[in-house]
Structure formats: structure tokens, C-alpha cells
Length: 250
Image (cartoon, rainbow, N blue to C red; front, side, top):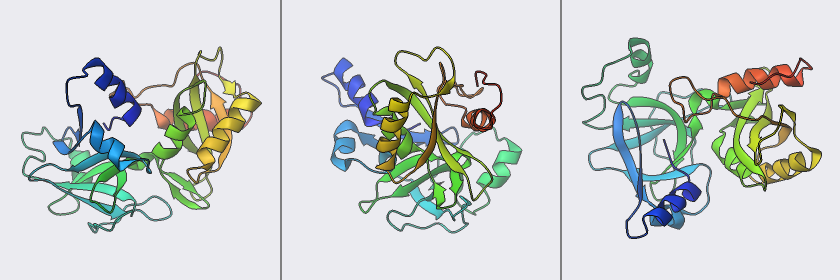
């Protein structure tokens, strides 16, 4: 998974004489790209996490998504076009014990592996990861990827980890931030008016309008990947909470 610059900078402090790199990849193909801390700092701020350029022998392309977050079937290299990240390399799925339902989709473009991640290539060919395809919000203004908004929410004083989820029918979803706080909230529910104001303001700078800000003591994690937030569960919880149901822990 891509490592944001603030976290990589903390790692650098622990090993000041080392050159710290963060690769990007997945079970089926690792590594795909690589970048060091200096490279991330040189790339500056952008929509997502910069994970650098493809490693030797690998090629990265983008299958652009439409307004409902559906990825196309044609690999493209157009700068700043957001879509599903596609990978081609000799080591893709080498000795990989395949999950056949997943395999059918991921191999649907001949010669390419569909990663299920979304992102874009910048004008220097660097890859920026913007989130997972299944977590794209489908709003009336089009598809919104979550990572930039989440990082903006986490930049607010007193914020912990944050997740941006969509609530409502596809094509009309509202953007909702669900977040941890420092210190942790005692119980889940709406954020204070001041925290909500600051989060909305920070996220608005990324181009996303936030309909509601909710806080939880702890964000739920994916059952298979303990470091990953379970955004699907959070979306269901946020929808039930905002509909006036009994507020429970997600």
C-alpha cells in the first residue's frame, strides 16, 4: 500500500543515515513502482499519494473511469486522467495462487493486470494512487476518489485517521467523512460543530463538498488486511446513522 509522505518522514527520522524508499504493488505484482522520500517531496502535493515511476520491466497504464466510477477497458497514458491502475510486467502473478473469481476480472484486458486501485499518471509519468475502485464515490457531480479528501481531513488539528464514504443511491451519493479523533471520541456520532467546520473547509480545498462529519472511537478494519479501513462497513453505518437509526459502533 502507498505510504503518505508524513509517515515516511517519521520513518526517516528513525534511520537518518538511510535512504528511505516506498514501493507500490500488490500480492499479484510486487514491486510495481518505487520512489524515495526526496522524490515524494519533489513531487509536492497532488490528488493522492505519489508512488513514483514503474520499476524496470514493468509498465503502468490507466483505464479511465466514467461519472459512476466504472473503469473502461482501454489502457491509456494521458496525464491526470483518473482511472483503474493497470500493470504489465514479467513478474505479474508469477507463482501466484489465484482466486478464480478475482482472476476473471483482473485478467479481462489481455496482457494487463487490473489492480482494483484508482489513480493517475502525472506529466512526468509518476503514478499517484487515489484509493480503491470499490471506494469511489458516485455523486451528482461525478466520481470522486477518496484519498485526497481523507488526507485533508486528517490534517485538521485533533484529527486521527479519516475515511470518505458515499451515502445514498449511485449517482446522487453525498460525501461523508467518518474519522477518529485525538484523544479518541467517547462514543460514535456527529462531530462537534467546530471540528465539522474545520474538516469541511479542509476537504473543500480538494474540490469535495462534505455533507456530514461523524466521529468514532475506532475505525473498523478489513478482516483480511488489518491496516486497511473497512469503508464498505463504514458507508453502511454512516447511512444508518444519518437516517436517524440508533447510533452504534460501526
